[in-house]
Amino acid sequence: MAGRVEEMIARAGRAFSERDAELATKTIDLDAAVNRAEIDIDEMCLRILARRQPMASDLRFVTLVMKMVTDLERIADLAVNICERAIDLSRQEPFVVHADIPKMGVLVESMVRDAIDALVSRSSEKAWEVIRRDDTVDEFYHRIFGELLDAMRAEPARVHALIHVQSVAKWLERMADHATNLAELVIFMVDGRDVRHPKERGSG
Image (cartoon, rainbow, N blue to C red; front, side):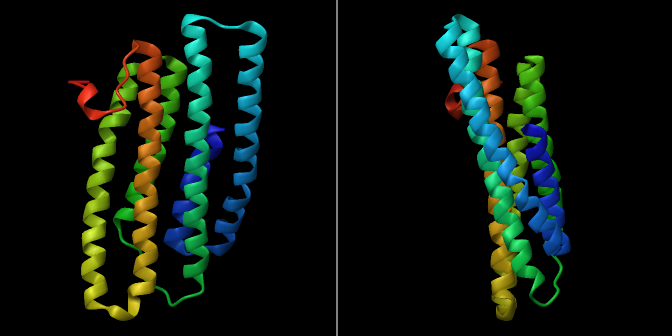
């Protein structure tokens, strides 16, 4: 499921940057498999809880997996949103997408991948690295937002297209938040620390 979500992020970013409606449509089609995986994983976790009645760390693992698949499914939904914008922009006059959008996409994809790797390897250190990268995504977003506002003032005729770019930047920022959620769950599973709120993180 995570691998498919990573693929959707990469393909959505490319479809948007290249205004490739065909790639965007094919990427949207992948969302059904992600939704199916969420349901299947939830059902497997519930069967484990009912039949095996896990205790301690095993119980923590199963319940956290159920939370994680929700974040992954929401990331996939955001990738669909980006693809829908790509399709809309493919029908308009060509323009150059903000140069930092692809960089944000690559960074977000790496956050999701490393959060899952942290889960598999039980590495809270790698999870902390994911959380720290969220600050970089936020910096990208705030810079893009400000520059796009300036562009809207300077070129009112391009406002519609620029709003789409602004929306994509926001969705990438939200994907990073979901990846951060994944990393926080890994830290809780491995170290027993709840770091969902900044004041609880300490030095990390």
